[in-house]
Image (cartoon, rainbow over all chains, first blue to last red; front, side, top):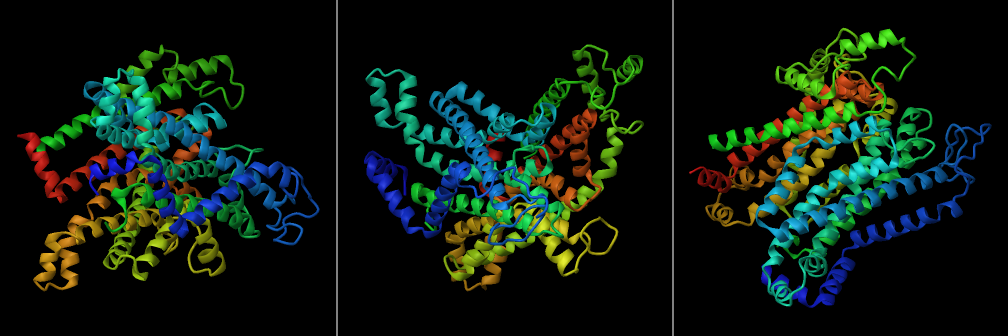
Length: 294
Length: 312
């Protein structure tokens, strides 16, 4: 499909989204991912009320037990209910995933939109900076940040968000560059709209498709990064918990109590699965250029 | 081509300078000096220590002298291992990490390319879905989960392979290499499938088919070269990821490599070690990104022409 036809479909705003929705509904894997994700979010939101046991509730006499009717996913060495701990951990993991992605989204979209819209020297300078930042070993920088400034969750959001916005900026810039020359933008100019309004009202809404797709694919990589750091002991700190941290604990006792490793692992992997499938499905639905086997 | 490579090397210089500067500033703005953490040290000892590591000089002077040292390739002494330099620590860990990375990359490229090519030969059939689903599992199964699970299955239950160590028992390199390589194998499988699909639909492949060439020659000789360009471009970033992954894998399997040193240094707040290793990692990553860019251009005639056009 060439750019002109894309632009034509974009003009009939609602039908593009309905088209995409119909395409997405046909993709069972993506829909399953979406369903799982919605369920996870609801469970995470309701955790304080629906968790079967208290978060810190210990039962030292019970100790570690395999899954049973009282404790569906077993208990850890302190007799704490694993289902409860995984639910609370999921709250943290998902929060990090969403907030850090939101940070990346805001910076990336603003940066890319301004660079792409202004063009010329401003664009060159802004994208040069992105190029330079791309070359920096960011994983190492995040570790460095966590070591130097203590391991706070706020810093974690910020550090991860600061890494992930680069690709977003590139995608939005490319999109904006092609939009900029189109007639409706020219029309907005001739109406005398200020540039900030044009960027906010006309340019950014038209870049939504790729942005949504990339956002969906950023969340799993952010969650993975958080789990990675928590696993090393450099991310979320006790008494707070996350899936990465639970996996870390699980590894220590996996010979005797393998379920302490396996269940948090399943929770993390399933969530990543769901997000990746949803992202792939959205890409097929929203981006005609990368449609399969075109 | 030569000009392009030179230009890219020149571009790497400011990036490295930025890395050194940011790292230096970060490390030196850390709350609490490197010797304040553990136990109360007498004031005169502290002063002597600070003088020994030049910490009593103003910051800009420390920065300039550090920059000079880095230029000469001297990354300074370690705070926590008295009498050992960061250079020595890197030199003792690097060979192990390099070997681990090499095997992991081997696993990633061989399995990934084979799976991707197989999948691309019959798109949207079982031959495509099975390897791609496995690849998806590989992507969603991070190394810090896969490693312990492999240890649990092959090390503890089946007792086929050793569960830790490096170069001590035959076979102890297998699990770490697989753990580190699997995620990248999955990415490479997806990339090579995509690249191959694009190439296989082009005219010159149809020509080759019309000539009656065997499928083996069409894929091996004509399609692979173009189809693997995305994979080659991915190798640079993958290398950076492998370094990060080695932190986890070396910790899980207790491998005495650079990654474990780095994590330990992070926990011990061994600032010179963190500073030195970060600079070293950054230089490595920049070097490998450069290498993968050059390789991608060498493989892609279109890009090659562009580069030539720019140079003239």
